[in-house]
Length: 269
Length: 275
Image (tube, rainbow over all chains, first blue to last red; front, top):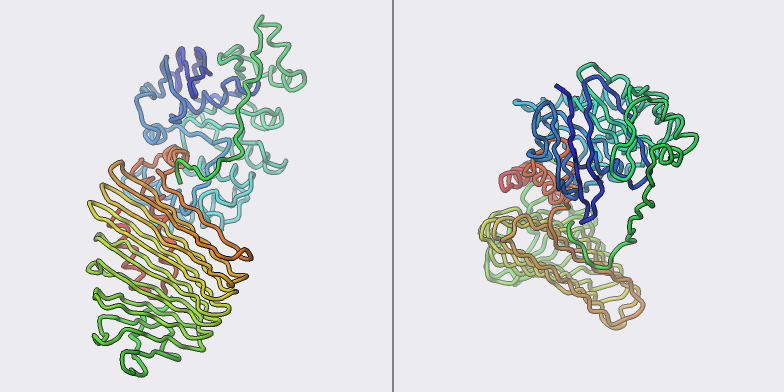
């Protein structure tokens, strides 16, 4: 049985169709590099698998270990073994990082984790991630630097031990040392009964983690699925040659409207 | 953290005025339920930092607190279940600096009216209120600040969470009168609405009669941030537990003001139970 099986997936974001029939199967032990130009559906695919409420699946199926993922709530998906290391992790005021990690660990076990055991786990993981331990006592991601946020994502992955981890530009905002630490941890977590789906714009991360397979998404579809040699070629030459070779036209980058903020109106706190 | 606060004993009573002073005001509890019915003005005065928990009584009579010149420290208002209607005035004299904190997680109705008057030069008040309302209960907080002198400062922060079919209103006016230059006043009111049946309103008002002041006000009423919910749920925490963690994180900081271990513990328990 494949680990993850996606068939004909169509996904809308704010009434705009982003994924346009994605078919993808990932098996245990695979480390899959996901590439593609900006705005062509990479993050949308990951968020749709995780269940982000802003992404609406209009057609298609997603199965994980044989279970119907689309019928599950976000937290059920996580407890089933899915993990998404986010591109921009939320800053949650008031919620202490360690309390958050404890709640996430406890959600997976029948008995609550004893405080001392939790402390040791976080201490060990922080050390491996070269993160100061006091970050665990700060509010979740609040005031964390870009690099600290990304490391905190991998720290959570290490503690939660997902069997399928998706990492969305986990190397952006990291310095060279940071990328190396993250790559080391990904390599450490690579096991025969697990799989990874990793988005990055840079060959540097892929060089360090040695993906077993590469896929490229253009116009909301998987257009290349196979050899990792494509990574180096894209890094050197971009995507145009690929579009030419496949006889497709890359839709103009789908620009997002950026709001600098609104005055005195907030939908939530 | 001090293990337990001692009850303060007044140093004297003159007519309807009750006096507390000196060392007596560090780590102490003033229990209004011990007051004679005659009391309508309470003076707090100390050259040492004060740390006072006022156990507010449920009586109709009006009580004013006068914080004497240069008295500095913390005043915590503790409201029991039976305090449904409350009206208090705190008057800060010159150089008095007070941090006020009011935790209110009790499952009851409240109608609270507090006015802080900054009477003289360099009177400063920080105000921190956290309220949780549930079931069919309603809580109304009218918190006002009156700058009666130049170079005075007030910073109000009201936080609330409403669940079930409850109601929560934050109102109040911060006024800087004419000739009160170089005064500074801030108002922040935030309410998180948990359930659809709950009703919230936050409308702090600024009344400024001078253009040489610093003033700001902000009010936010809304649901739990959907992105925060998604992020936390994506780690396996259920929606309900996620909301509890966020709510706790939103309301709990007020407990940090309280140095009496037993009272702080009890507030943690009350909050946990309510959630």
